[in-house]
Length: 90
Ligand code: SF4
Image 1: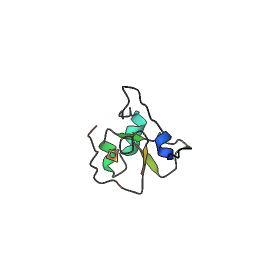
Image 2 (image 1 turned 90 degrees about the horizontal axis):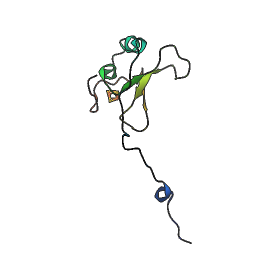
Image 3 (image 1 turned 90 degrees about the vertical axis):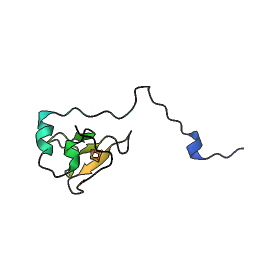
Image 4 (image 1 turned 30 degrees about the vertical axis):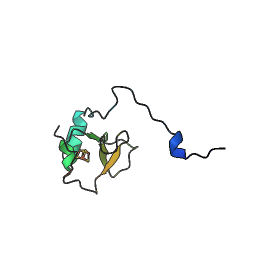
């Protein structure tokens, strides 16, 4: 029996139009992010949490949609992103 690593058995496939897409912000999200010093608040890859929702951890501003695409990276209130090489102006 031939041994193979787990990694060799994993295949990914994506639709042709796959790729990171900027989030659409509500007016409440626009207002919410203004209070933070993070550069992310001006970045098109930021997906802010919906203010006053219960599900996200309380220390989250939102999620970065590009750094770990196809996964989201949590942007915390307490780890202030001052500069970022993936930043793109909204
Ligand atoms: S790309 Fe950088 S600046 Fe933009 S949301 Fe992600 S971490 Fe923030």
